[in-house]
Image 1 (tube, helix red, strand yellow):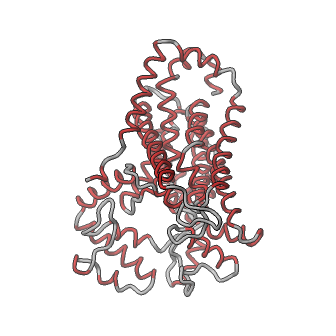
Image 2 (tube, rainbow, N blue to C red; image 1 turned 90 degrees about the vertical axis):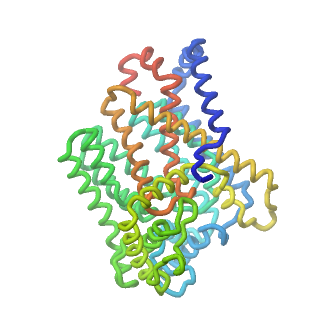
Length: 473
């Protein structure tokens, strides 16, 4: 099964070179000299340089790229259509524009409709918004790295994300993830801060931010589970974990009420986020689905007549949930096997290159499609960079798990690991397209940065830095 191949040869070679280099540099004391030079540089200056690099790469790409939206090959056509309909007061309609819909979260189309109403329907405004979101995400990754480990992990993680090919190329593609990731990280940062220094104001604000983020991508709708795990098993305070988890979930779901009410009146059912959940469940959990090909079975293959005969998205959503749950209850072991395979497939690489494809579907007037060799080179760079980061993130996870007795600050790094696990569990029971990996790739940068700091600098920093400097870091 080819989709089970996780990482290609180049990333493995790259990581092996890093490990060998670390051993050589330690023996030659070169790391000591590097740190003496590095420690004299202002953290603020380094962070500013990283943010400038992140901004320049993203801005440079959207200016140079010949791609223009909307294009039938990507989701931006529907996103912009939804935004236009909302702007002119027609409401949230189906792609055909003939009836009300709830097939996708309303957050990003609603935000774009406001932007268009104020400034006009200009695609470059959306691209600039996405550049700003990307740079802000780089800053938040730095901040969370500093929150949980130290400023060195934060700076390195920010640099890894600043030059991350997928993140840079995605600036041109209209995706909800740009705003979702930013809000998600903001909420997680507040949860981490509360974990370290409990304050109910942080929980309330985090709940509000996460509640909004779930209308961009629904993955954050149950972050109370991550909070419960961390407080109960890491901080060993089950009571506070339950209370905080309950408050977070109430706040998140409160933000879903207005949309659920709208859907009740327009569609006849109080759908809190999207009516596509049933479809996703059934596409993933049926007799013929596998990790790569997630499609409903035909009637001849044992497919559900109720699902195929559904005339509305609400009926399809209900039938999909019903048939998926029926199949799961009858095939629990197969369900687990498919879930694991789906997760492995999503995390692996085999040159599918979705971000490169999405960037060149529609070429604007006066420009030409880049040569196939150029696109192929971008594809290889994107996949190999991810492969290297992913392997390093696995090493980072291992090193963190065997790191001895972490401080409370370091224990909060579990938020990163458990958020990844929480996200992958959702993928395991629904759909696992490689595109969905985009939302958690910033977390892989944090784990990769942790691995590199541990491999190259951890012992030296621990010996050489004054105690107060370590605390401040």
